[in-house]
Length: 347
Image (cartoon, rainbow, N blue to C red):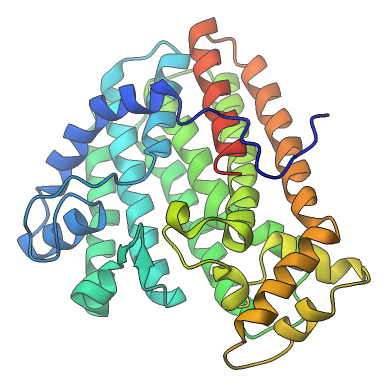
């Protein structure tokens, strides 16, 4: 097993397929967003980095477009029509933005990708109703897909949204609890992150009428990839570079979030975590020195390494699902490259 070495990034930048597929899906996402009522369109356009707060055109990167890329690779893996991939890609991107607009408000996050979050820029009400409108639009797009499997597609996406909501509810519940277990955290991560990547990986294949075995393999791939994604995201929330993540350094410790590495450390009973325990079981603003000490303790106690070892375990399971997929070699290669990029991004 490859061992994580601090400062070593095992992926050399985003895979080319992310850029290539963005060129296919971005125009369709823009067209879908243009269907929103003008005030709601403005909020979503700003959120995606297309415009400034006052609506002037801007060209900021709107995330990695991972979910839309997974949707396109899904339909290509089963040799279905690209139109189903594009529909699924737009739908999952809209659902993702729905969740982000609401989560930023509920979590009190004021920055996303180095800019004020949408609720800060336009107000809480505008962010809420914009998110609601995106979810309704995603369902409308599936209804217009022309697939004989539309109903199954909507059911899959609705299950995903239900899991997203459950995951966010757990995350909110954790804020007032001191008895959160690692299993609780895994369940929360499965809802908040893995559910949507599972949906993104299988929705287009389902719309295209792929055999159930292929749909199941794609769902399994997305689920495991989602868990790896969340583990790395949790690491970045503690040790990430603010210039890269767009969030303040030590952000998860500052917010006392019960993330996977933090909960694993507290549950372990390991020695040498006095600063972490003092931080997590206290209230009010914490001094910067305490945050830095807690991050250092986590790393020294092996929980930075633990995160990446856990992520690699999920990556191996995701790779097993790709092996079972029966797809063309070039599609399998793209899926594997994407999975490794997600797991080793910005270490």
